[in-house]
Image (tube, rainbow, N blue to C red; front, side, top):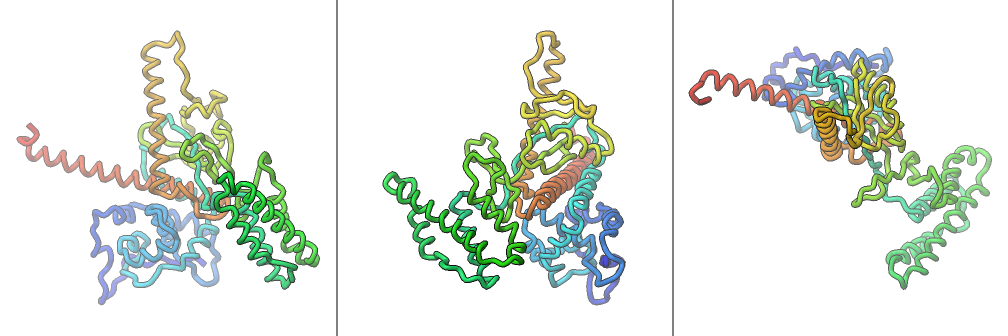
Length: 436
């Protein structure tokens, strides 16, 4: 059942309302008043039953998601800080200051699962509309970046150790008696690999690595032999995953790099400081002059040029119209026209081009470079650097939420700049002597 937000007109003789206590010029105060919360209530209310125990209010949960991404904190931290921060409470719809946590941190997980990608895209779409005319430009800029997953750097030995631990755990849960669990032998083999790069230790480390692989395979086979038909059915997916990890070779495609995040890819972007990154690709579309993000999606590990069609379709869905042109780097080499949208990539000028055409082309591709700092801010400030949410759905949600709060921050900065310009204009108008 859908929960109800507190009534802002409520009165209490013994409490003072948050709206009267807080600074009305604070960013979150202004944003809380500017945001059309009824829009989210209307669009997401169909996801709740009409009977049963009331859930947490939609405004509260939406506000917590935005605050989590805006300040790049975890679910636990956003709930803990919410109790201490009256501006956060006012932003989430509270009328009076609260002394207890708004919800259990796991409620945010359930809320994300409830609204899914469509609900998060609704928040992202509203963040675009919040910026008004700035979001509607004829030309847009696009680029891709890697969003790493929260996993350890994958090696064969690490995965085999995890398989051994999983097998021992399954045997304990199902009451299966294993012939041997190998805790001391595995520890000894790991110690033998500590200095494996030293020439004197190479053969010893190689032998220990093969021994760990042998133990992992032996435990998987022993589990399969001793399981009954029902147990084999219950653990079928896990056993198949273990076998795939143990049998995969260096040259194989679609390798498994993590047991709990099977969709992770190995991506090489040619970075000197980080040759390989493990996660998924994110495609970002930004307006050319104002820098508003109007498209964001998870594209797994596709070639950049193959992503353009989906990116254009999403931008059209969010803006209710197509851009005239889309500008990319040389990674988007391919068709020059996709769905009626012109695609521009850098190339040497023709001999027949006039000076004016050369100058316009040069200016266009200089503006293309403006997407790089946008990606930098998304990674460092808004949680795109590493995704802590589980699965492919977690990737999509993290990308959309990071871009949504970037647009919101952009709106707040622009609003502050407009107010400052207006005050300067009024000041100089009243004191014209200072202008001279």
